Amino acid sequence: MADKADIAQELIDERMAQTLAARQTPRRHAVPVDDHCVDCGETIPAARRERMPYALRCVECQSAKEGRR
Image (cartoon, rainbow, N blue to C red; front, side):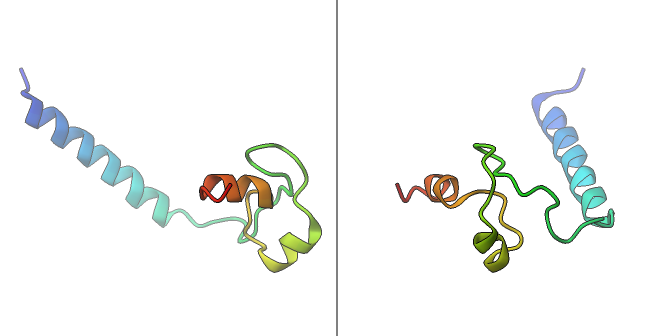
């Protein structure tokens, strides 16, 4: 029977393998395809997408995530 340290090491090894595999997988799109906020679902304004093409959230949700509300 494995002890807690062995189980923890197995989890660490599994996560490391997943992380390395994800880094080696080529990305299909450099810019998010969806123009909707991942949190609220509202459309991200074009001006924000032009300034921040990688934005996943609208200004309000990004501010809330960063604790600026």
